[in-house]
Length: 403
Image (cartoon, rainbow, N blue to C red; front, side):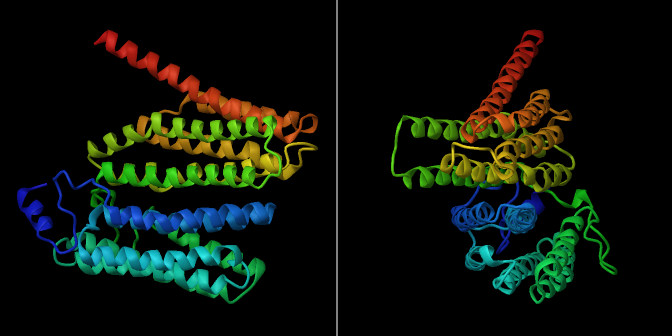
């Protein structure tokens, strides 16, 4: 990027200065914004645990995808907008309040709270994109045009979001699925709009450091929810005996292992790759916008599994408990395979074998109790992390020896 371009951004009223140490820095206003999503993830996991069924899983998946889309689009916007500047900071505060309303509506989104959820979601998506397009119009007209296209797409999907709020049950689910499908398909279509053309991946020049850190913070929020679930469930028990403490240790180990798998072997590599790529937007879209969806979903499902296993450790393992205990780590590992394949060009064998091993545990479901299945799944997940650690350490040692 030329010095002239850097100067243009440095003097902008809303844009981040490019090519400086502050370009990839996460601002305190962004961290403050993330606080709303602590409540959002809590609401989502509680709702899923309370209505755990095939339909409940579908509804929770749709809500999670909507929440993620709000958050990741804001992250893309603040990759270019500077939250240290007043207009952008005000935008984040407005989005926080709307996010609070969105969180409140989650438990009743497919009931009486449907209109509140739809209106706040549409306001966040359309308002942020329109604001970004407007403030970029002079200093970065090319990107302003991109966000104008995004605004058109969000207005189109808004028809289905709001329309769905006025119908019930399967009709609402169908309309909201169409709305979400439009939004998720739009980046792959380049946000094509008649008369405005379409975007290309070369248009999306992003800071890999900022994108990686923002997504890492969202993963931490989700991991924090599993700890909150564990602590709240155990604190509500009348008796804190040795068995309960052992289960608590197992739940914590499972959460810590997910942290190890994600942060030790992937997060830093992704930031480095984006920073040194000729098409950073393409990698960021695949590795962060899409590949993080199953990572987040797996963590949320694991939080539900911990609640089930801690609250009812003994007795028969029913289908919902088994699907949560095994499904959480499986979905999490699938997301990490996608994420790491996007940045390394290959899938980790340890993760593939780990998924196969977790699936194999399903044959034990009729013969074990919930706590036993939970501990076995945690052991499998830890084995995956240990395998990857030893494998990569050996690979790096060989590379150093050859050098």
